[in-house]
Image (cartoon, rainbow, N blue to C red; front, side, top):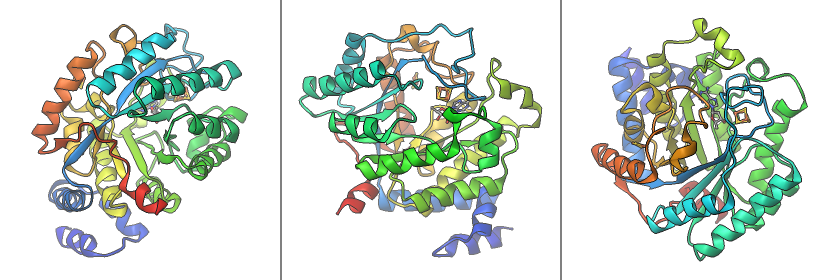
Amino acid sequence: MSNNMENILRKEEFDFKDIVALLQAEGEDQKLLFAKAQEVQLKYVGKKVYYRGLVEFSNVCEKNCFYCGIRKDNKKVDRYNLNDEEVLEAARYAHVNKYASLVLQSGERSDVHFINRVDKLLKKIKEITHGELGITISLGEQSDETYAQWFQSGAHRYLLRIETTNEVLYKQIHPNNDIHDFENRLRCLKAIKKIGYQAGTGVMVGLPWQTFEDLARDLLFMKEMDIDMCGMGPYIEHHETPLFGNKDILWPRQTRFSVTLNMIAVLRILMKNINIAAATALQAIDPMGREKALRVGANVIMPNITPSSHRKDYQLYENKPCIDEGADDCGDCLSLRIEMAGREVGLGEWGDSKHFLKRKK
Ligand code: 5AD
Ligand code: SF4
Ligand code: FES
């Protein structure tokens, strides 16, 4: 097998079958894949790892994704909404600690009140940080107008995971209605890119019924869409969700973890200069999960800077790390972890996707 792996890794371009084989790599083969990904990473994006301070500002969500712990119908969740001052405080924290970038994330809402509130927050954050803090938003599916409005107000990167590019699987993990429509999600991703955001997407790895072929197609989709950033994490079942009923057909957690690393490594080789995040969900399976990702291609990490009092209420999956920690704990902890992974923190730099900068030239 190793011989075959070496042959594949030597190619300039992978075909579909190559990618499927790479995603299945284990043992010695996996080591070869990781070594190649690491080589590409160091050559094209270097040793630096960029921080994005993550603020989960509200867990109110109008959607009902079958996999997610804060879905609308989960009545066991205490819903919260940080006030403006709490969000601005988190932004100041990121700025003072030279995180250089912020990610605003929340459950999905598309009412006018929400849209205007986000707009106001974006402008205010830009103002109090003298335009120095980069802002990424991860606020789901919106109209083209809303995306454009938020872009005007200061957000310059957008994360919207496609979750899976297999439409049949997409339907299996979402309710079948207008607000959970695969075509609309595609429309959104295209709009985000067209408006001028650095566009990020990603998938969950190890969903029930998902195959290696699906995952290979997910990577080819990212290449085809010419995305700038990616975040991929293992799917982790949550008791209070409909998909929990399918837990018996899941790959073992370690397999989901290992295949997620393979996805990151292969993506790094396929798209050499994009930004790839070491997803927090990796650490829900392996205590060193994020460090491992940094060694095989990931170059962005998102320290949680949500006020501690609300962290426990933002559990999209179970076993989420950092629930009891504060912003300082996570910052210190991560800088140590990054060092252990043989990487450097790129403090005070926006760390924009090199791919995006090149695309814009
Ligand atoms: N396991 C792993 N990831 C999840 N997400 C939502 N629920 C889960 C889960 N149970 C991911 C989705 C979403 C992102 C914000 O979190 O990919 O886009
Ligand atoms: Fe809401 Fe996002 Fe969870 Fe879906 S994944 S239920 S949109 S928070
Ligand atoms: Fe939060 Fe380590 S990153 S405690």
